[in-house]
Length: 331
Image (tube, rainbow, N blue to C red; front, side):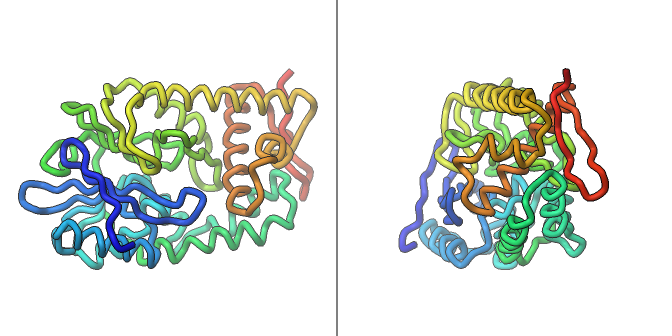
């Protein structure tokens, strides 16, 4: 990119559009300069040649050196937010910050003892996914490793204390569901919130049930959105799409969306026991044409089924050895 895609907002927040793979195509990073000419970078993007080139142009256009980057803050562990942090740390010497829970999830996913690439396809098979999907799911997962390498040295944000960025004190808020340990940052004086993927305009953040992670991600997600909706927000700065107003209304619409999806899944089970994959096909059939889409559709379906079980609207039918786990409506 020959010219940086930059927008400066009230309070001096600089929005940077960093390229990423389709379907989203871009992730928002934010730069908060302080009075001493030092920078806090939030969510630098995935580690790709395109993202590296974008940051070269950004710093040149803003007339900052790499050493001006003092802090690199990551809202959550997903590659499009966390992935470039290690590279940016190596270039700048900056300190990388995230929640301890989010860092645990990064290690579970990509660390030396990572299990997800092998465990997730087996998890899906247990819930009825046909085996011919497995190679594509595994290849899809492995494709992310270069996007998070090198991984950073990390310091942990204490959500009980304000965190200073750009000479202002921001309150960290931990709300999982989309990603365990996801951090948003709220500035009460201005009503601004840097919300990562916690609340997105026009897009419903994915909520995934995965092995070894949060066993009730949809419950966690909905509890978190109820907490966030109570804030007085004048403008939200999300991880994708454009900064927006109407934050409370958007949080409410996400809550309604998931209640409607729960009702749809329950209605399917009313016709008789189904596997998780069968429910997934019924809910997402028209929108799944790749392993990437199937991974998120299946994980989100299982998150909704887990919530139906928790609410005692559905029950799990355990299989015989080698069989498929089924779900049935509670009569």
